[in-house]
Amino acid sequence: MRWLNGSQCTFFVLTTKPTTMKSTTLILILSMAWIIPFATHAQQTIYIDKADFVKIFRAGVGYEYMSLNIDKIDPRVAHTLFLNNDVKIISTFINKTSNVAIYDGFYLDLAMGKMTSTPLTYYKDPESSFTVLMNFGYKFLAGYRNETYAVLGGMNFHWMSAFVGSSQFPGNTLLQGYYPFVVRGEYKIGEVKAHRVTAEVWSNFSSTTGSHGVRVDYPLTSSGRFNISAEYRNNSGLAAAANSDNNVYTQSSLSQFIIGLRIGNIY
Image (tube, rainbow, N blue to C red; front, side, top):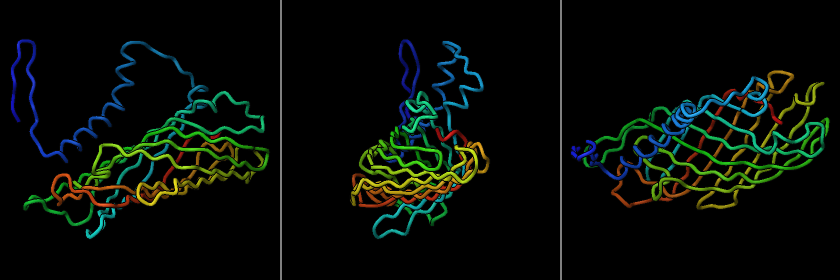
């Protein structure tokens, strides 16, 4: 670390390994994702009543099991707290009595926790156990919905980055983009239209930079606002192992199993 003095300000330069710098950059991005709304609030106040909040926002919280599988290395396993925030856009303005179904939203997933695998070493320096993941994007699905069921299809445009310990995924860039096709089904299990079991499956049909998964939500209330959710995700790409030299990348896959509570109207 070196301090530099200028005529107007004093600042420092952090000298570190490229992998550590990328991890620091990701943490800064995560921090900004939470700080920006407060900074905006300092400039102006926007009033959103309870009805608008319920109408627009969805959220989730749960436990996540994460496994980064790199060739010739034991799986890098971590346990994290999973957080999700989802803001509806087009679907907010669709008539809920219409048979035209739209499910969409900008979303941000954050996960932070601890790697439990045996630490790898790089020149006798053991890796950190701190684990962090960020995934964000926009999902748009359209289809048909009636009083009993719904079938929708579309795409999910998302970008992600993760550090499981000091192993980086993806390894060759800060963010990896994926654009899988998504199919969503809904089936009413109660007397109220919104009381539905929902399921989604997705894939981009790629073996090298693949994005595949399935999610099922089961309603806890007749309003459909509170759901137990179980989800499996698998994304593939190049990874940089904690014990590898710089610019050495290996084909790998990151698996996630998430179980938790999701809150928000389905439409």
